[in-house]
Image (cartoon, rainbow, N blue to C red; front, side, top):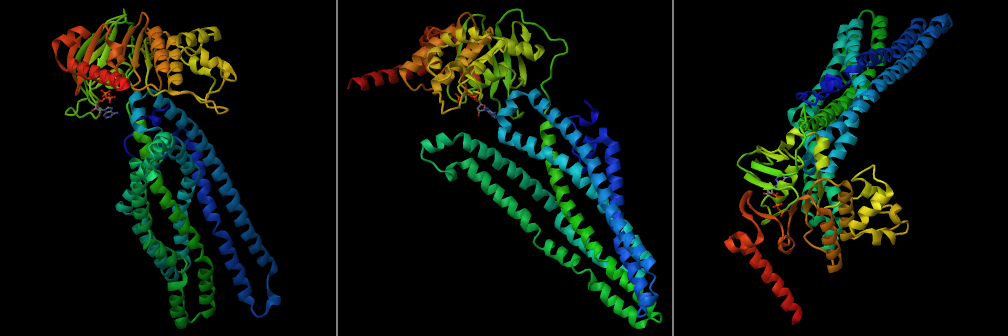
Length: 604
Ligand SMILES: Nc1ncnc2c1ncn2[C@@H]1O[C@H](COP(=O)(O)OP(=O)(O)OP(=O)(O)O)[C@@H](O)[C@H]1O
């Protein structure tokens, strides 16, 4: 991987960053720039040819029979050659720039895809898939568009005005200056419109708001069932509503920012004769050589409209420059997330004890907002350690840190005596299996979904795991059995069935450590019974860390730890903790009261 694509790139302008990204293809980019400039220069040739043609005609007027037809024809050919040269040179420029752009895009996408698999998994939870998709699809694609189109046009928009100014001043400096006034005014209007810091900032905010709206829309669509179930509307989904309002605000600010400059710019470039004609009248009324004057004046009348084309191009390029600045900044924001460091000499755990030692962690990097503070406990090999506590206590954070979704801020987590940061990613993933509440099934066959836990497993092994996870019966009843594709032909799996498939996945993975997030609610007692049975199979002989929501399931746990506001407040077996009369005892009393209430409520 080239240094140029280093992910720690400092903030740069979009142009500089795109050039850096394409630096492996400098030759092609340079060729595109040269060809594009030549194309722009060639585009002036027809105007000059037409001028010479008219000059030949006026030179003999009214005696047209003295007209040198050869010279006139040559002018015609010259105009045609200019047009063809412009087309060919521009085609070759675009061809070269596309060659450079496609190669760069390919590498960038591979780099980005590789990078997002190496950043801490926790970032995926916070960045959001809508935003990542937009960056991958739109922001990175725009780098390709910029190198392929806007860069050659940008070079042409620098060289063309220079050549144009030289021609304008060389033929007659007075008409030249008169023509330049329009160009300068147009540039001023454009600079006010697009070049101001405020507009750049608005463009950045508009792009960001678009991203947030994307993210919120994806989330809204995903959570549609919940929104509907609670009889809510899109406008009541606060996040989406706010994202749409934010987008509306910035798109309006950005668009309205143009409202004065755009008409000014358009008026100027469409009225290029505004100053030229009065100057022409002034000079013409005082000249002794009227024939010479009229030739020159005609030249300017023919040539000056070419200015509009050049200035129009510059305007669109200015807009794309603002966009690319924001696009590469957002891409670099992700590329600059440090990758999870991999140990150079990975160590192997000697057993499957999981030990938290003085672990503190903050999601924000702000040490005042700790999600965990000085948490120490040991989950012994082959034992069940349950984590309980009120919402926000830090239970999921503990689970996430074990598999390095994030790295601890201080302290250490070891597996079999080895800090998880000193284990290779493969080894760590091999050692730990997760079963979360939020289960993701791919649109693939159930067989492949279970096999995800162990890609080399045979069909028989998959079926054995499914049997252990209590899902064989319902899978067998599906139209294509294990080969039924999830989500196809109206196949719908219940929450409990999905959870059992996830358990089958973990069973087939057969890692020695299981981190389990017990589901908070089961739809029916039968499902609950089956899931419990599946859990029991999964937990057999493993080191289990279970985030428990119903205290009945953990009565027999070897150890229970109570988490409150990021602190481990109690630790022990069920009976010990109940006897201690602390927070756990209080929770247990509430729990048994609730059960009693349910039973007596049923009896009434
Ligand atoms: N991705 C995140 N970014 C920032 N803060 C977070 C993130 N995830 C959790 N937190 C914060 O960390 C603290 C601990 O949260 P955690 O999810 O670990 O609690 P929990 O005990 O699992 O809660 P619950 O039972 O509701 O799932 C909370 O204050 C929470 O707001």
